[in-house]
Amino acid sequence: MGGLANVTLGTSCHRRIESITAQIESLFERLERDLSAYRFDSAVCQLEDKAGKAPLAVSEDVFRALSLGKQFGELSGGTFDITVTPLARIWGFGRAKEPTKVPSEQEIREQMKLVDYRRLALAERTAFLPIKGMAVDMGGIAKGYAVDRAFELCRNANLEDFLIDLSGNIRASGRPAWRETWQIGVRDPFDRSRILGKVNVPKGWALATSGSYERFVLLGDTRYSHAINPQNGRPVNGTAAATILGPDATTADGLSTPFFISGLKEGENLLRKTGAAEVMIVPDKYPTQIWLTPGFARTFTPVAELAQAVRLLGPDSPPGESAPAQKVTHSGNIARARG
Image 1 (cartoon, one colour):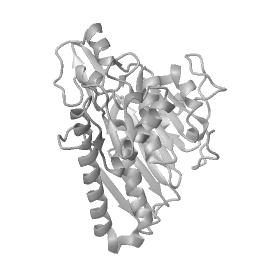
Image 2 (tube, one colour):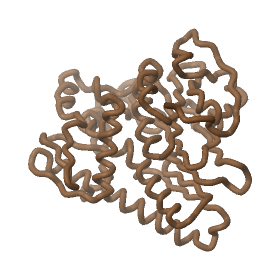
Image 3 (cartoon, one colour):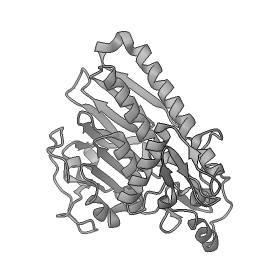
Image 4 (tube, one colour):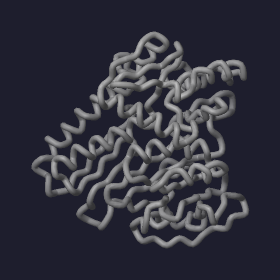
């Protein structure tokens, strides 16, 4: 899936480490074969080939992943859209060549006609895109889904203490031997060699980040993010990173993109719909600001030099330039879920 996978298992299962990791690797390879937009034999690519022609019979995992993609599209009001592929390609992402100039308004409008997650028809383990040229890209949810499937595999094998990390999509169970909770660093989007701080991940919960620092194109002197806003057809600007702490990896992964796209201005409206998820948003501006929901703040310890950059994101602290920095206490666990 274009990233590195790491599995950390507790010492109690050291005799099974090779067996368990082999099973997880096999699972990840199978899901990549099913969901990758870069493998021409994958269900995702076959679905594009059959667009406007006929439904495609798909596996249970593909059907579930596509269904979840539509659900997050609905939850986000279309900000998350797994059919955004035609727009992404004219900006040079996916399997497309990097363009030499910014797409014209006419090009953007033409491709926007092919983008609408609601048109994806799912029924009786089949999927159908009704218009030739439509395509899906599961990159915004596939890694989270794969981590959750691996999490289920470990739980079904009676494992208690483990952590699964697929390219920064992380879910934790139990605890490591050296502390009460798993602790994960959140990368500084402005300096990949540094972190913003550390998150104490509650047992069973997951963490995922969308950012502009790994995938982008340069057109002229401007850097354009890989995350495309399907509502205007353009790459996102104004947000450097969005990190989600959620009850499962699919939720964390599926929400990180819409919060990255929405940013501070629209993130408050999305926040009211997201139930148990906790959010961190870092605007693309200097000096660094770290906006956190109260539940996220209770799990987060910023690095010392950014302690004054932390601000609370929520109904009582609307985002804006004048909002004051907040003092944050750290308990290591979420006191209660949002919602």
